[in-house]
Amino acid sequence: MPIVSKYSSSQIEKLVNQLLDTLHQQHATTELSLMCLGNAVSHIINTSVPAAQRTAVASSFSQALADAIQSDKH
Image (cartoon, rainbow, N blue to C red; front, side, top):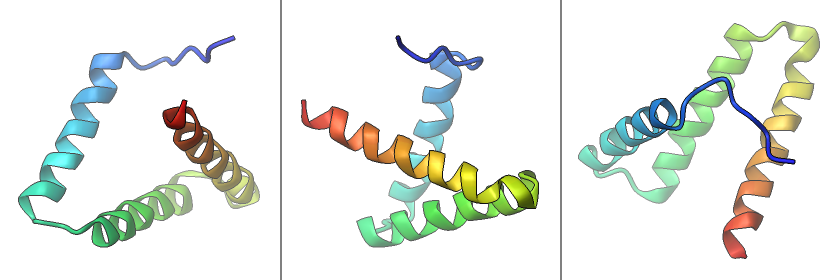
């Protein structure tokens, strides 16, 4: 069963495109892009998620990322 998001596809695509445009405008390498996005994710988790839930949220995020990469192979 697919996961239903409370955010529209267009809202998600707009933000992702803005992030990617910024990285492209800065001529960020793959390594730098991943470092920056990782730092952003860490910042969001550390500032927006209660301490007791941070490890679980990070694990869920990590699993979702791994699943997304695996689904791109098919």
